[in-house]
Image (cartoon, rainbow, N blue to C red; front, side):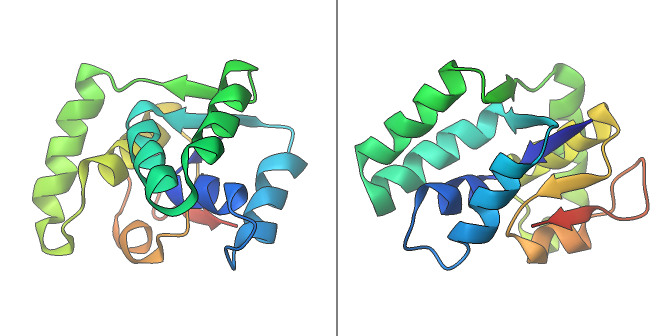
Length: 137
C-alpha cells in the first residue's frame, strides 16, 4: 500500500505555524506505507516553500527525499494523457496539472486514498478505479 501525497500536507508538515501542521506531520510519520510524491508535486512544493518558509524548509524536505522517506513517481505518458482528460473534464474547476497528476498516479497505483488538504478539487474529481477518493488527513 502507498499513500500518494499532494502538496498541501507536505507543506503543512514542514510549517510548524500552519494550522494543519500536527495532523499532517502525524499522517506522514505515523504510517508504515510508502509515501509517494508525484514528481510534479515537487516543483509546486519548492515554489510554496520559497514563498512561505524560505529555502531551509525545502532543503529539509529534499534531505528526507534523498534519505528514502518519500518515493518520487514521474508521470508516464499514459499519466499525462489521463491528466489531459481530467483537465478537460473538470475545466470548470480549473483543475491544474499537479492535481490531475495526483489523480492519475492514484489511479495507476490503484490506491483508494490521497493525502491532501484540497477538498474542493479532490472531492469533485471521480477517479476511474473507485467511486470517490478517501482524503487524508
